[in-house]
Length: 561
Image (tube, rainbow, N blue to C red; front, top):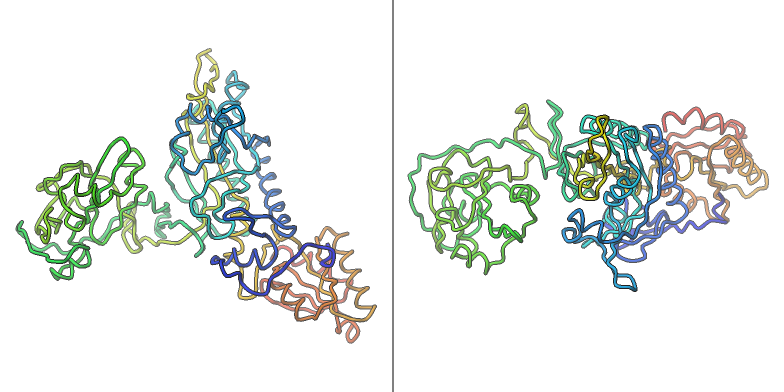
C-alpha cells in the first residue's frame, strides 16, 4: 500500500470533542470518521485492524469447534416477546414494516439461535454445537461516547453453545474462556477475568474480560492475595468497622443539615456512623427504601437484583407521598415501605434521618429499631477487605472487551428448542452466549500502549508490519525504498510505503502517529554509509542495517513485537 494512492487522512491536532486517548488517536491517524453520534465509518487503515482482529477471532473460534454462520440484523418482534425481552430493553431499536408488523434491530442473537435450534436440533446426537458470527449490531445508546467504545452501531463476534445439560455447558464455557484468553493474549492486551452480573441476558452465571484503561466505563475489585476479582456491580467487600459510641437512642436537632457530610460535620462524628436512606420505585414492586452506610455508595445494579426488577430513584414528591417527609430527613424508623438493608449495617448503632424536618435519631440499630431484608448493596471500595480471604481490595477502571454467559434453558424453553435424550425423553437445550467487540480490542490496545507521539500497535493487529519512509531525493534512495517495500511483501511482511513528496519531519510525525511496529527510513545514510535506519516503534530502538538485511532483521525482531 502506497500513501500516495491511499485514503489516509491524518490530523495534526486532537479533535475538540474527543476525550478518550483512543478516540483522539483513531481520528488523528485516519482510522475512523464519525458520521453521527455513535456512528462511525471505518477507513482503510482502521478496517485492516478490524480484519486482523477478525482473523484471530475466527482462528480461535474454529479451534474449539465453532461453526461460522450469519444471522439477520432484522428480527421479528414476536421472538423477543416470547422470551420476555421485547418490553424490557430500552436500548433496542424497534420499527414496523409497511404491513405494520413489529420488528427489532438485533443487538444480540439469543432469540434467533434458540429459534434455529428448535428447528435443527432433534436428538442428543446433534449436541453439542457451537455457532458463531462476526456481524453488525444496533443499539439505541442513550449517551454514545469515548469514540468506538460506546456506539449505536458496532461489529461483534457473538457465539452460542448448545449442550444437553449443565455439565456439558460447563465444558463449553471453559473452552470459550480458554479461547478468549488466547485471543486477548495474541492481541497484546493486558486484561483481567472477573465475575459479573448476568444483566439482561439472565442465566446461571457470567464473567467479563476487562482491559485496564482510564477510558473504561467499569470498575473492578481485585484481591492480590487470593485472586478474587469481580465487577463492582457484583463485587463484595468487608468494610472496616468504625468505633461505635455507647449511644442510647435519642432525637438530635440537625438544623439545615441534610446530606451525610453536613450531618456528620454538625454532630462531629465519623460519616461511617450514619446511614444513608434512599427511596427507589419499581414498576411492579413499588417503593423500596435502600439503606447503606454513610460513607458508601449504593450500587443500583445490586439493588435491582435484590428487588427483582429495574428501579428508578424516587422523585421528591414521591418521597413525600410514600414517607411523609422531604428528601434529607428520610430514615428507616417506622417507614411505610419495605426496607433493603446493606449487609454492613447488621452490627452497630448509627445516626439516621428522623422522618421529620431538622432532626436525626442517634443510637439506632438494625434488627432492634427497624427490620427488613439484608442484601449486599454497597459499592466495594479500594482498601476494604476481600470477602474470601480478608486481604485488601484494589479497584481499577477497565474497558470491557469480552463477556461469557451461562444462559441455561431460559431461551430454549421460551422458543421450544428441545431434544430427545438417550432414553427418548424430551429436554430443553442448555445454552451459553459469548461476546467480543473487535473495536473494543483495537481501542484497548491504543489506550494501553500509546505514547505521547501516537499509537503503538502490537504486531498481531497492526494495520501493517513495516512502514517504509522514503526521504531521499535521489533516484538511488527511491529505488532502494521500492526494493525494500517489494521484498517485505514477498516475505509475507505487510508494508506501507510513504512515497509522498513531503518534508521528512512530516513523514516521521505521521509514522509515529500511525504506530506501525517497525519503521525503515531510506535517506541520506544510504549514500553516505550504504545503510538504512530501522526503528522499533515501541522501544524507539534504532539500528543501521544494509537494505538487503531489512527482511531478515524484521523477521528476527517479530517475536518481541
